[in-house]
Length: 376
Image (cartoon, rainbow, N blue to C red; front, side):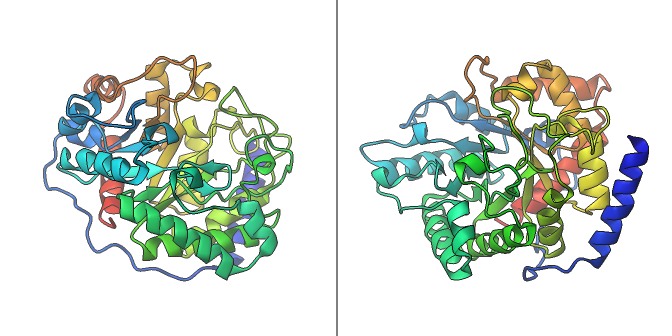
């Protein structure tokens, strides 16, 4: 396997050196919001994203507001259950304003708004109609892609949502994939076309002041299983081309953040760790080979591919050591105990104080996160 990866690395290096960027450059952020002296507690808090609960009307008594005020979170992720059916836009904006008001550092207010079936802001609540990535890839007209991306980004910006957990850059290797191809979430079987449309989506979001997060690294398009339910091993199905959209977009300086998949890939990690917990996949391939130094987000840490096989503290340590910067606990997966920001924060703080996680590792994530927040 080591020999196989050496061949892979050489091949990758040659292809990456020869590849041309297919998207336009954007300027680097002008500010990083970094402090000369920031407490360890604040830095750890900037690594945690959480769901806000099951309510669609927030009150001052909600625990999430206290967690934000104490600096336990860097941001929140919103779901359809957080939309008030009687007054969707008004109440969602009110909720977001209340959340931001409690934080001394601007929050990431994030949502999965890919379009099609992955769409929280549905037309039945008065929001614009969306289409799947698969539809846009088949039409293959950047004006159409820009039109739908602009509709989405404008709505997000008007509500105060500043991070879209999209676009999906998984290549459609397996059209029957239960969570990607089968749901129309991939633009194409052609990695260049995937990157081309994703680049247009990103640029359109940037024009509206909304950041984006690519997903799911190092490629979920070839999977035959759902990581929400358990292990998805793509070793026998994964294709090298699944890395290429990331390369194209990183080279184009368009990437704000990248989300890891919980998939297992024996070609990229001989230990067969889920990508989210694999230093070989994140630190070696994404950071060293692809030369990405931006923010790495985890997919939901409570998905069964992780939670059924690793303990709570163990997953935190492994993910941080692997190179994840922002840990997501959405509290959405059934049969999983809810984890509060206070619990997550306390567990990480204890591991740093015990020497199980280095303070330098926390500082590195903090700097990357602050640089991304500097773009808000």
